[in-house]
Length: 377
Image (tube, rainbow, N blue to C red; front, side):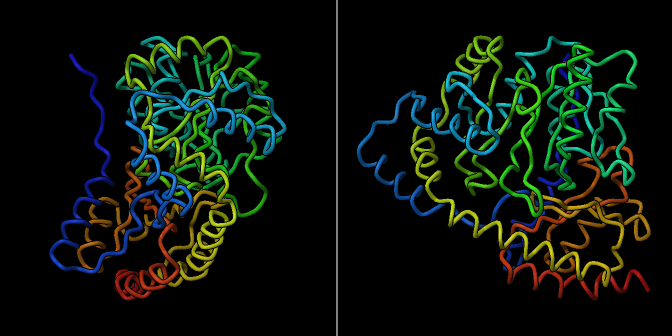
């Protein structure tokens, strides 16, 4: 018998959006957590050079691993050996490697609800048990040390994300320290998804490695580096799990894309260009926060980072999937349903991505305004 996992409903909304676009409709994509910008120019140029000169066989870039390791010292004051860096085919395989290397089937792993849909479903696919902790406005939609301490029995692992998907909330440094202390005391292995690091609108996000050297860290070039389609990520593994992670990477995925590794190395020298994207996300976030109350949306998770706004629409619907599908059909604005992120309360939430262009976000607001106001009235 195979494991039963739920569909990723936002993908279906995206498929519908692309079908409508093929029919000639004007579509504004706010459904997926991906930049609307391309990879940095220097990264694209590097990829062109590689295509012309290399056969691109199985390969893992030692230079790129060293550059990633150095970034932990630069950004967080943490020493990471390049040998701890395992390059992967995006963050999703990195999550699979982390879970499969750290836990056995039947393991219980705690995570916040709402949270990224693939945490719950990847755990199920690996025959592990997701232990979802409800996190609402009082918890700023984030898991806490107190909630972990209260679990009886203690879970085998905990997944945290800061900034988080779908809310964009960031866990403060003191709370991260407390989470690490509780997990260490109770023998709980931590996995931290740090894929949205670099996308903060106030204080920068802190890495769990500042507080727990034995945590596993998932990251990728998809978000800050604007390279989602290049399918390149990495996992930072603690020394005691490096061999297990590498054995699984080699057998399950071989190596990540060669061209993407060359491009990613060049992308590290494009900070000015990439920070310009973050400025656009900040502008779009601020504009939506200003205008969403006019749409009747005032109960919103604090979007500290990433590029999301998670809004309560319970006063308008009890079926956010149908709501988002109808919004797309009527206005051409594609958004994400909350049921992907919260199977219990997500029927009354929706998520907006602010990673589109400034002009697209402004146009989306104008399209949505009469549609929402007709439902408020």
